[in-house]
Image (cartoon, rainbow, N blue to C red; front, side, top):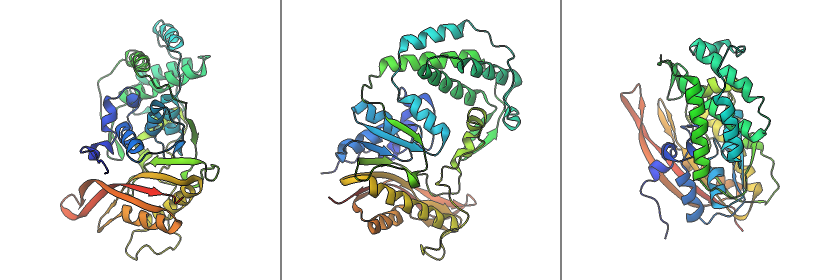
Length: 366
């Protein structure tokens, strides 16, 4: 008998990760929780290697490492791929602490400026100067893994001191107190070391790649399972809220995560009233499902968290459409579990319908 957690509606969000060591090194509101992955692996008896083609900040990969399972992650965002890698590496904490002591003895001074002028205006000048100082110092750390850990700490610190708040899918300017960069940055590194000592994740390090989920290159019939959540069908371009991190540290103002949706669909008939962006989304998701079907082993399962689309005049039920497309490709539907429901509103006053977030469980027939 299938055991569905009572708190599944919370598990399909990133919120539980906020209190979990390592998982909370970087807040990524679009993700799901480690608890969801653990439940999925055990409930559906998923086999390794487990692939997450939309790995975000590595929740699936980190849980697999904890469980001793091989895993592979892909994400089109350089920020997400970097965070995933940083959170799932093995570290020598003595080396990290030795480097931390060196940084404690440094006093930030003018060392140049980030070239991105649009991002600079979102900071107090002294704070951004200090961030750039540490950025240059981190680049000189000889041990590559220690360098990655320190850079993630600095990226997290940067988002905390910026004079913006992340609201929905956008950044809103909001003046904050002048927080000390050195104290926050070094405190973050220290916390990360404590987390590493506390969490014993001794499984194999996952492979992490920056790549488009539609054309991920894996050997056919080589993957035991998929656990993932593609960007939800909505009108938010997810990475707009990460433009500071992308602009400063990856020299990209934004990276489209929503499968690089085109301006128009390819003409496939999903219903005459469906918005063009939704038609394009399902065209892209069909390519993702086809790719999954190829690399899954016979008998392999895919556990996918999906969200419906809320549009001004209709709700698009992504779960049912994706199941239909998956079955056309050859998948067998094992289950559709509705995790959450919420009202779709137009102009914040007019009810359009109910949007579902669902867990789809698919199987490639043996």
